[in-house]
Length: 459
Image (cartoon, rainbow, N blue to C red):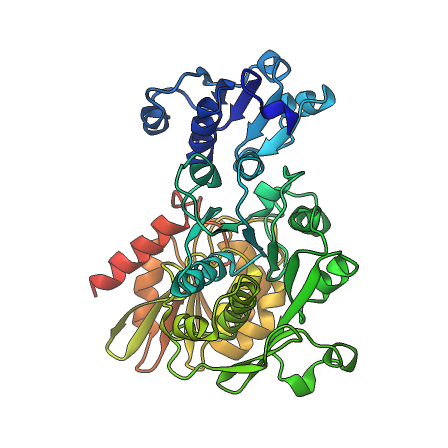
């Protein structure tokens, strides 16, 4: 991007983790940097401390419209809505508004493996990262997970591959971002409190493919009809994964199938590029059909960049669930506790429930994100013994699904966990999978999950 030359004016909107990282990179590259945030100086102490020694101007406490219209480029943090008046005015003035990952990618020459989807992004990104490392190559893991991509762009030491988890919030302001491998896991309604509708959310996800060529690869879910329709005709080569056995793959795909499919206790690889191979899953630590999808997607991405079957097999068997994602917490009096606090939408909650054969006592609720909860009804009927509802969305949840299980509405999060334990019997599972955001009671889903684990530890 021409606008990222030394001496040009850049505005960073939002001083969270990605905003701090973008500011550091822009300063190192010699741009004239201003940062703006609606929070005041005392609220941003940690961010400002991290920027000590860097040369930039700061406008804190409010956004100044004039500042936005005097820039050459604006870098917007993912938590900032794009419909705020200063950003709308900047776009009318033809000032580029880009994301932190778009900024970072401008300075990255190593092959990028980008992962997107409504659910499973973080687990899949970690799997790919570990497979690359197990294969004897170096990898950076960042983006929407943990470390901002600008941190890598600012580093002197480089890796063989860059693995990036990408969210819709980041992708909606990407224009030149180009991965070598793009993994599309799934799309389901989410963040409808930010988007006008599901189609706008999907459109943001699909920006990931915009600049891909026939030299690149798309890895996607054969069972996701929405993705299959939207990705058809893309120039990149396609590799598919499916939890169906080969016999159940539609004939028009089976004839020239390129990718991975699931057979009992194993993943099978079938492509023209690589020899057919079977990856046994006996003893694998990840639980649930959704994690089989994550495994297959990661495996295909790793194969594209030359990772051996032996290295992939090792990671498939030894990879443990990440914190707050179907995380086993404890077993108390023959009752198992699972922390799935990252399950912040309906689709994720469905997939979590499918992971269990045991009777489930489900703790759900939190901040509503504009989704409809009625699609949960068959899952509640099939898997849930007791339903404990808490948080701002509990009444809406109760109206939608409360009649399909023995349901309790409670006032506090602590009460939710105690009631769940009180109702449990030997062999039951107590599952925290809220299907909602956390900000009604907690700072984020991590804080919610940690609080759940601390309560369980006291039993």
